Amino acid sequence: MIDFLAAFLNFAAFILGLFALLGDISNINFFKDIYYTRVNLVETTNSFVTAITGAVGVPDYLTFGAFSICEGHNSGGIYYCSPAKFGFNYALPGLTGDLESLIPSGAHSAITKVQAALFIPAVVLTFLAFLIALFGHFKRPVSLCASFLTFVAFILTLATFVVEIIANKEVKSAVNDLHISTIQVAIGPAVWMTLGSAIALFLATCAYFLACVCGVGRSRRHRVRNEPDIEKPRRRWFGRNRY
Image 1 (cartoon, rainbow, N blue to C red):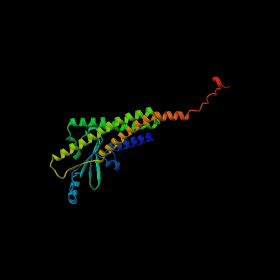
Image 2: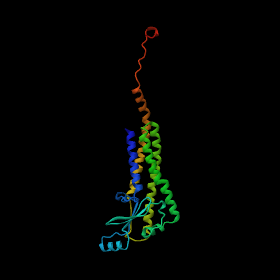
Image 3: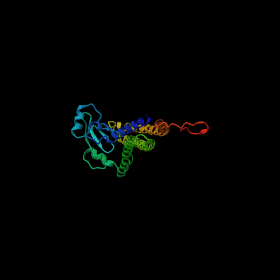
Image 4: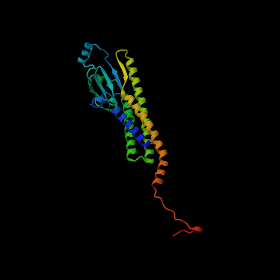
């Protein structure tokens, strides 16, 4: 039973991590609502101001995903996303391109390393651990291997969450330096999905480990229960066998 619980937690962690990774890089509306950071540029209920900003091409907000930046209006939602690329290193026209150009070249390299060394490996290892446990029929060596992989994936996912929190604080600090009260920064749902994935991976690691510990006794009981009963030869007096 604990094996299946571990596999379920492992699969749940994979889904959460995958959705967080795919946010802002898909044309599906569901994924467009998954992002790490949202910067609200225009916060007003005045329809006249909204019409002007829309006419001149100024978005109401920006969302930052793992590999892309999106622009959107409060009324119509996201209408443009930059091509998915490591380090947000691309040349684009408009406000998105201007924001990208403000990122130093060294930061591009650092972002690329974080994306390649944390975001992707965490999701891949989570899925690999799930496959190993599922197709390995939850045997003791398989559970031990899955426990190790989920623990490594947990460390990477937790590090990803820490990086996301730091990045949000850096963006908020940069916006506060502009001293523009209308610009607000909010943490996106992808950050909390990453945290949920890390928690699920930690619980899955513990469950796989318990399956390894309990698997020895379970295997012995299973072996004894399934062994055929061998009738011992009956002995006569003086220790001689009866034929």
